[in-house]
Amino acid sequence: MSMFHSNEAEEFKQENLSPFDEMMISWNGQRPKTGVVNIYARVFLNEWTPWLKYGAWESHSQSSTQEQAGSVKVYQDAFEVLEGKKATGFHIKADEPMRLHVYTNGESEQGSASPLGPVFLQVDGLSQIALAHPRNRDLCSPTSTAAVVRYLTRKTVDPIQFATSVRDHGFDIFGNWVLNVAESSIHLGPAWNAWVERLYGIGDIYQRLLLGTPVVVSVRGPLPGSAQPYAKGHLLVVTGLDPVEKEVHCMDPAFESDAKTHVRYKLDDFLAAWERRGKVAYVFEKKRP
Image (cartoon, rainbow, N blue to C red):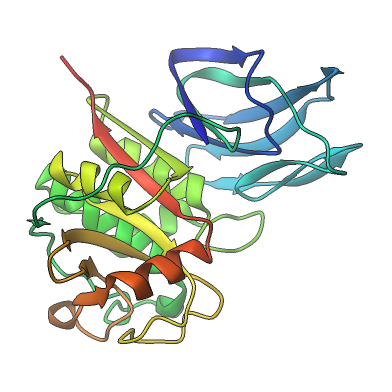
């Protein structure tokens, strides 16, 4: 698993990489005032594949796509290489300059450090169930992300408005990973980077918590003690870790009230549920001066 980060640019290209068959592209920046910014991607498989449209970001709308050309396809969050083939390079381009973050599942020497002492972040509870929205049960991703943005900025963020701003009009869903991260970047501003990636393990979450940044993760049940079965996947915020008690502290928006969203899951149960979603995480990182 590898992450690549660009400065603000219209194109981002990397070659001679560890072979990969999955890629996720995150972008940070402000929405266009008018028109649409399209994001395109291709990969290198002995030669460059055709360009596929990865997403569209408009002044008041956003969407992901479903496209396929030969051995590559885009579906919602992911760019995939098919037929057992592996890519060794990527090329991303956008209609306007953006900060681009690219995850690939190529091998890396990076490991996951073991947690030491406990760490806890005071993230306010935010229940998706308590929101006055007809599809509140579908809003785990924007509710979780809005809670993190509130914590990092100490500003009021309306979770319903946030959800409206991340709705994927291509698939009529609120849980598109990269669109949630893109919206978070608007609220966080240029001092922050935010992206989607698959982490190595609990040690990576622990390191983020030590830096003062909660981590949004995707899980799939069963998860003992959870509000719902989470059979189709669910997003929640990891706010702390107690390696002594072997518990993961979370702000889980699926509970019925803000006060009830602060829960603790057994470490082994959490890891199993997170592993079922491939250890996906939304990562937030403040830029160094």
